[in-house]
Image 1 (cartoon, rainbow, N blue to C red):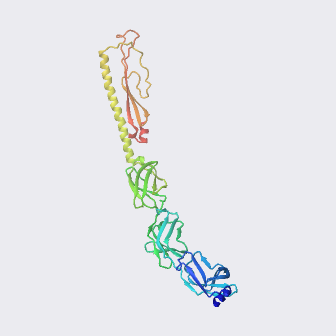
Image 2 (tube, rainbow, N blue to C red; image 1 turned 180 degrees about the horizontal axis):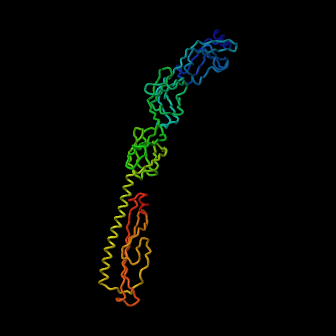
Amino acid sequence: MLLRLLLLICAPLCEPTGLSLTASPSRPTEGKSMTLACKTFPQKLDGQHQFRFYKDNRALGLDWNSFPELQIPAVWKEDSGSYWCEAKSMQQKVTRSPRVPIEVHRVPVSNVSLEIQPPDGHLVEGEKLVLVCLVAEGTGDITFFWYKGALGLNLEVKTQRSLTAKFEIPAVTESDAEQYYCAADNSFGPRLSELVSITVKIPVSRPVLTLTAPRAQAAVGDVVQLHCEARRGSPPIQYWFYHEDATLKNSSAPSGGGVSFNLSLTAEHSGNYFCEAKNGQRVQRSEVVPLNITVPTEDRKKLLTSGAFGIVGFITMALLFCCWLKRKIGRRSARDPPRNPPSPAPQESNYLNSQAPGQLQPEYENVNLVSGDEIYSLVYCVQQEQHSAVDKPLGIHTEDKDSLDIYSRLKKADLTDVDYEDAM
């Protein structure tokens, strides 16, 4: 009884007989919180002691504190070490707990993937490509790697405490069209993503049009080769050929390069030529290439000769027809006397090629009327009959005049410009 009484009397003045440190959780994980608790034996009122926590030889948090616990919001691998605490009584006596080793556990990276922007992976030369490497799980500092091609040409390395990291190519070129992948590691070994393909489309450059003729000066009948080619541009490339504003031909180059076609020349093919190329939204046009076509002298002479003989032949046939018609009218006049009073003798004809008055011959005139692409020539004949005074009353003259105007129509296409002037 006496011993118990003495303990009760001196208990408030006694120092703690023991001190211990505990961690919760006992196996902390990176990125998670951890709580340290300092406990005395036997248990004393908190207000009677001050506490302080240590990691290795470094004090944690504030100086002495009356609260026996310390909470760390997030611990990392480097927070692993030896922890202990101290308790100080009101009499300034300090008691130290045993050291407790604490290891912070790291979660290995897993489910690494590579995302690209734009998502479809199709870019035009000059656009920006963004490669985003993502980790579904993993703690601590993660080192990210970006690789190009199946052989793994390293492009970039970044280390950061994050589950995502980006790598950018500001302006892609044709050489950036490849397969890409990334890797992530947080000391457990790298984990790789799947391969992602990137395509880079090269817009067509301004095409070049070339005309290849068999001689220095192209002539009618020659075969000219037209070749259009854009020196740069991703296939397929579509081409169009033009003469002035008329489309001659369109063709596709599935594997890139240029296209050609042959043109057999006529006189109408003189003029300006150009071509266009397209492999996307934008169309590129070549410079204009002029082509002058000459008509051979032999051909011009043939055209002139054929035109002249054609006119002469027509006039000859017209004269023969007039002669036949005159005979027919003469026979009719002999059978049927004239019923109308005679008129004065005809005056000089107004036609340019008319004969002198009184002559009973067919007459013709090339009036050269032009309408559209046709030329008209006029051939006419006049039949006159004079009767003596014995047959008719005095002072009365009779005249039968039958005239026929015959027009011939010729095509201007049958003559060249020189032929037409000669025909005039």
